[in-house]
Image (cartoon, rainbow, N blue to C red; front, side):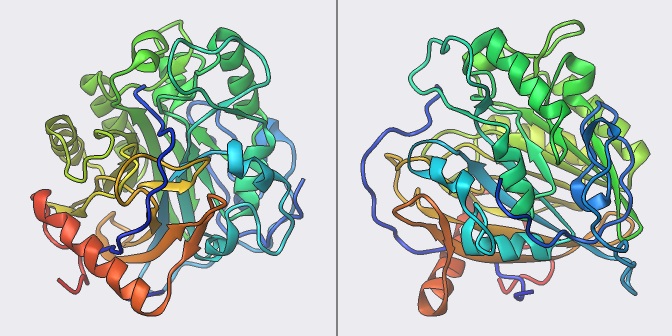
Length: 386
C-alpha cells in the first residue's frame, strides 16, 4: 500500500459536454473475507464473503482472511460510476482487466471496497422530468463485483431516473445482486438499513443516503410504506440509522451523495451533516456528486472525505479538474479508529476509465489533493505527509 498521501493534483484537460446535473465477464479472483452477517435491509451479502443474494450459494472464495496482528482492516472508496455512453461497453470487458480497468487491483487489494452506482437498473419506465437520465442492466453489479467492489451505494439523484417501473426493476436487481446494495429500498427501513459484515474479524456497517436537493429527493424519498432512496435531507433519520449501525459494529462507514457541482470546497449542509454523523459515531463519512474532487481529513476521530469525483464516467463534465479521480484507502483499527490514509491518484481517460497515474504526474496529483483540504477545516489524516 502506498504511504498515506494527503492530496491529489494535476490540471487535466476539459472537453465540454453534459455533466450529471441536479438535476458476463470472467470473475476476478475473489477477496478472502469473513462470512457476512445478513444485511438488516435485505441486501445480498458480498460474494467475497461466500454467500449470495436470496440465500443461494456464491462462487467459493477460499478461506476467510485471517485477522492482522494489529487487528486492522483496509477499506477502499471510489467515486461515481456509470455504464452509459462511452462506458457501456465496459460491461463486456473480460478478465484480467475488468470493467474498472487497471485500478481494479487497488480496489481488490483492500479488505472492503465501496463506491456509488449513479443510475437506475432497468430497461423499462418513462424518464423523469430532468436534464440527464441514466440506466443500465443488472450486469453492472456483476461487473463491479468482478472488479473488486464489495458494496454499492445507490442513494443518489439518478437511482430513480425512470419512475416507478424503473425503481421496481432496480429493487429487483438489488434483491438478486451478487454484492450488497445500500441506500435504496422498498421502504425507509430498508433504504436506511446498514449492510453489516465481518472483515478480518472486525464488524463493519455501511450506510448510504443522498443530500442532493433535486427531484429524486423530493419525489422518490423512501417512506414508511414507500420505496425510494435514503435521504440525508432528513438528518434525524440518517443520524438514527448511524446510531443504530454503531450498536451493531464498531466500524461505521457512511457514503453520501452531497455537495455542489463544480465546487471544490464543502458546502454548509455538508459540514453540518458531517458533524452530526461524527457525533453519532461514524468512523468515516465520505461521498461524491460534485464532478470534482474535494478535500479530506479528520473531524475529531471521524474521517471525512468530502468528494471523490467522477470514477468510471459516461461523458465529460463542464467543470475544471473533472477528470481527476483515484481510490482512497483507509486503514482502520478494530475499535473503529482510522490509523492511516492512502490515495492512489488516477485520471479519467478518453474512454471514461480511471487510469492510475505514475511518476511525476502522480506526485503532482497527490500535492494537489493535499491542497484541497485547506478549505475544509479538517485535520490531516494519520500518517499524512502534510
